Length: 360
Ligand code: ATP
Image (tube, protein in one colour):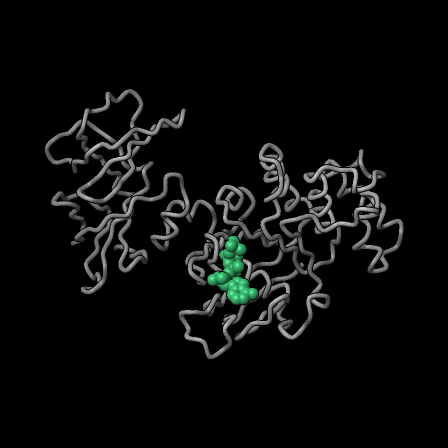
């Protein structure tokens, strides 16, 4: 397994002379540590697959370099990069048995038979494939075939990294839940560098130690699931991660106060040097705003509806024209039309032109 450095890496499908804004991947430099579990998360078209394909060598970058353990591997073909890949759809040999499929990547590299057998047995056990080892792959369900693909991706212990491109897309929802947690456990057991592309935040947050959030060809934040939740570096991260996503409303911010729709709410940090021309917004997750009976001094909101999610209820409200979500405290008798909102100041963030501003 390897440490991976991306050095000023960028890609344009329209050639190097295309305008910078049109690049599918805008220049990024970052390091992914050896043995880490990374998820590339973002909506369709944000550049996740492009970045994964640059690492695997399927796509050659327009600019920049990729290093594995300090060695520049950018000119190398996919075969020479020593990586394993798992795709959306099963890539297996139907006429081989499950065991032969799992053994294939090892046999192909001349690994001694004893070692092959031991490793295949271990991977089959970890993926609950042991009872099927002698069955022909073609007889199995689509789910089982994709498990074989996962196994083939994980069977070699000497790869620089294992790359997964939305590997649970074809899996039945019930099994998807199990495999999400299983992949996390597999990462712990097998000690490999893993990079996992998905647009599904639950998959990313379950699997990864570090989630790399992409938007419009850029990495907008790279952090632990808790960091992304507690301190989104960009309004996009706040909105994209969480369910419901972060509330983001225009505000005037001065010192330790934010004015929203004519009301003042307290901040627990001071913001004295905000850029004068920037678009200033306040972001707060619905979990940190409580619905209350209307009262003087509380920001008031019009109630649209209540979403009851079983253990928690969220009120969908409007502040002026802005849509907003707030937690409904247990036992609150919900006001008819208008409610007050109670903010937790330690979770209210300030953004200038979509970027988090650290107060003092
Ligand atoms: P998805 O989840 O839909 O696969 P993604 O986040 O993986 O999306 P990419 O597939 O990397 O995004 O696409 C990034 C941008 O590059 C998109 O605008 C896409 O249309 C464009 N793109 C991707 N592949 C090619 C290609 N082979 N030729 C031209 N443009 C491409």
